[in-house]
Structure formats: structure tokens, C-alpha cells
Length: 325
Image (cartoon, rainbow, N blue to C red; front, side, top):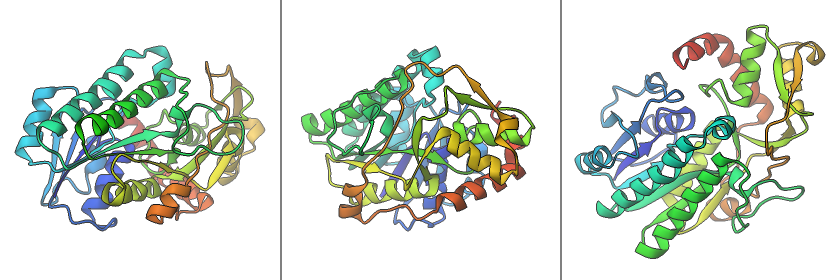
């Protein structure tokens, strides 16, 4: 079986490729091919540890380009696709939504058409908890109606619906994962956790939207990748699987934890800024389905994981910022 990982030079996709190639997530893929357009958040150096590994291939390509992607699927004889490719930053989507719709919706549609043409055996769509919108209490199950509140989450919801429609209309073997907020090494600096860390490293101020009481659910990138691998291998066709974390924090609580690791007084480094337009207040996923069907639960304790992420950043933050600028 030959696997294609799209968006595989980004934060999550590159870690997924790395864990598979190094057999840290056991698998029997004959080859693993990564495709990435290498835009601002895609970084080829994320694949340094595996780029020369036998049976690993990298192609710089755009998932929206039909000819490029068709050649890759045919040449590499792709059997399975895991689509991580996406424009994913909410603030950027508010400033300009076109790129998000183009990549996240039309790019997914292009991949689905090619997967059908080349008789790909399984198509996995990596999605997000943000498609559900905001939830005041309780946790989302997989059959909740979609109520996205940003152009980014709306584009991901549209892609999800396309994937399910291709499964129904054409009988394609499709699955979807929806994960909570990720953190870990190599995350692009515009995201919340690396942004806070980089501000402290550079003795700057940590920006906090509104009152900082928005609640997010967190999972280490390695746990997310384990969940995706389980669904890719054993998930039921046509199904959606939430990948939930085990830690929910107000944004300001997370900032305090990071301040504590740096031994900084939050009052000296936090600065409150105007809230984001349409800012969702609370996210929470139910992980009951993936636990029951695939025995998945996060393994990495949040306090341990965030401390390890800070330690990695102290060694690498300047390098990662320069290379992604």
C-alpha cells in the first residue's frame, strides 16, 4: 500500500509522516509520499530527519493543480490519501477568505476527483473541531450539526461535506477526523502556543484577545497523529471521528502555565487586545466514539507536553521563525 500525505511539510502533516516513516506508529506502507506547496507555513526542513529515507518521496505541488496531482498519483501508484493540506489560520481567513475557500474546498474537491479516477482505496480528510462552532456546555458528538463561525471553519465544513458526498454518491471509501487544538514542536509561530512562547523568549508582550476566557481543548500533535493513523487503518468507511484531548483551558490559563514555566509574572508580560471578530467562546469534543471503536485516548500529559514544547522552542525558536518568515 502506497500512502500520500498532502500538506506533509506543515506542522501536523510532517509529524505524521515522520512517525510513520520511523515506525514510531507501526505501519506496513510500501512507500510514503509527501506533497506540499511550501507556502509560508510549509517548511521542507520539517522533513529533514526522513527526507533521505528509502521509500519516502517528496513533491512540491499544489493540491489544486489537477495535472501535477494526477501525475503524482499515477507515478507513485497511490492507494491511500491522508489530506492534511489546508489554509488554517482564523485571523488570516478573516482578513482574506479566498485562499481558504480555494485550497480547503476546491483543493479537496480536486483530490477527491483524482482519488476516484485512480481508484484510491481510502481517502482520509483531516478536519477540525471548529466546524461545529461554539458550545456553551457539554461536548460535541460526531452527528452534531455544523455551525462554523469563521471563513476558515466554514471552508473546512464545506470540505467535510464534499468528502461525505463523494462517499455517498460514488461509493468511495472516505473517513473524516476532527481534532481539537494541537500543540508541540515545529508549530508555525502565528499559532497561539508558539506565539506566546516566542514572545517570552524575545522578552516581548503576550497578546490576549478580549478577556482571555475563551476555552480551548488541547492535544499533543503526536497523540493527534496516532488518532489519525488509527482511523486511516481501521475507521469505518463513511464515518467521522472526533479526536479529543484531555485538557480544556481558558486562553489566559494556558498563558499562565507558560509564564510559570518561564518563571515570569503574568502581569508583567500579558497585554489584552481587541477581541477577534466572531470569536468562538468554547470548544469541546466528545471522544467516546473513537475510544469505543478504536481504543484511542491521548497518552501525553498536557503539563509534560507543554513543558517539553517550551524546552524545544528555547533551542529552536529563532531558527523556526527565520525559516518561516
